[in-house]
Image (tube, rainbow, N blue to C red; front, side, top):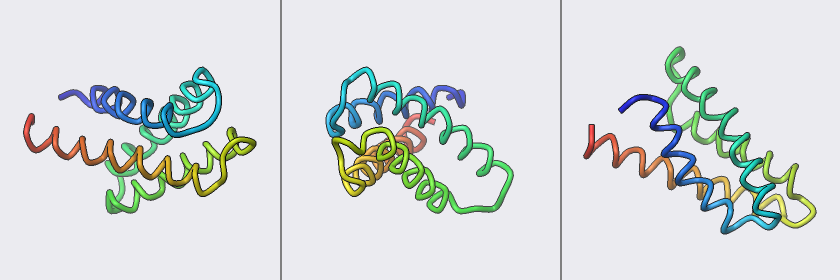
Length: 106
C-alpha cells in the first residue's frame, strides 16, 4: 500500500474519534485534527526512516504533540487531561489498526 494511503487511513480513524470526544464545533475539530495530523504524521515518517528511534517513542511524541495542540485550541471547553486522553486514544487506535493492515493486507 502506498505511504499516502496510510495517512488517509490515519485520518479516517482519528478524525471521528476527535469529533466524538472533543468539545467544540465540528468544523473547528476537523480542521485542527487534520492540521495536527498533517504536521505530526510526516514528521514521524521522516524521523522513523532516518533515525534509529523506536516507533513506540515516536508514537508517544505524536500523541503528546497532538494532545497539547488539542488543548491549546480547545482549552476553554476541555481539560488538558481530556485532550491528552483523546490524543492517546486516537493515536493508539490508528496505530493498532495500522498494525492489523500491515499484518493481514500487506
